[in-house]
Length: 270
Image 1 (cartoon, rainbow, N blue to C red):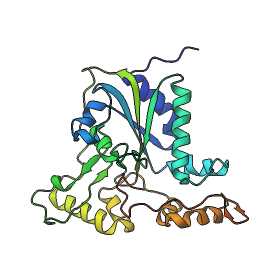
Image 2 (cartoon, rainbow, N blue to C red; image 1 turned 180 degrees about the vertical axis):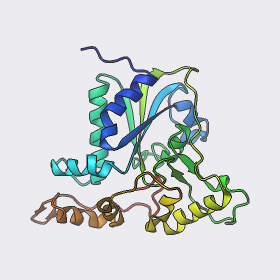
Image 3 (cartoon, rainbow, N blue to C red; image 1 turned 90 degrees about the vertical axis):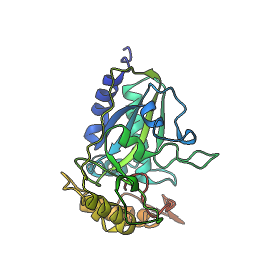
Image 4 (cartoon, one colour; image 1 turned 60 degrees about the vertical axis):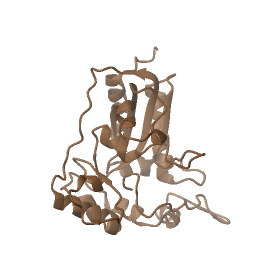
């Protein structure tokens, strides 16, 4: 059977058919939208009209994709189980929906080997795709922090902070024209006071989850999902063993603890 023609509309439909029922969202964009807001050192090396898609995980992902992934015993090696699940889901969707097409996938945790810079800026990609608004210091008039740096954070119009930005898919050789217009992400935290509260909660108290409720979300993480993400990365294999998803072997567990990384989840939540 011939593979489908890849364009702006079919990419959205086919990806949604493959991953939406597993707790993921896909949002198309042009590479030019992304590159236009970044310095040359952080831009993607593709033509400005190249079609790309940013993939988000919603609160449903944990129960619909991650736990079944663990139940099937698909988790192997030493990398983070969530990262393995996301990669497995996206790779399966690409191979099933776009056979033979060249799709470059960058994940939120991946770094460029030479510069050690992220392969893509997750929150910037989500903003320019119209998926979630990226609130930063510059969005606060006369902010009160002086020279104290405050990291920005994306807020989803439906889920607030209860989501994560997982990957950027670039459809190499597929270009879209001027008929595709960019949409601004919904500004769901419009007041100066609320933006100050959001950035302070995210930077100073992100572990208490409060920043995620800056707007009333339609859905939050389940208690089990909160327990998982509240557990330090080094202790998550033990938690998965307690839940019955990993078996202990002589000398230790099947999965070694992932690196803890930055304290603040800069790639767009956990």
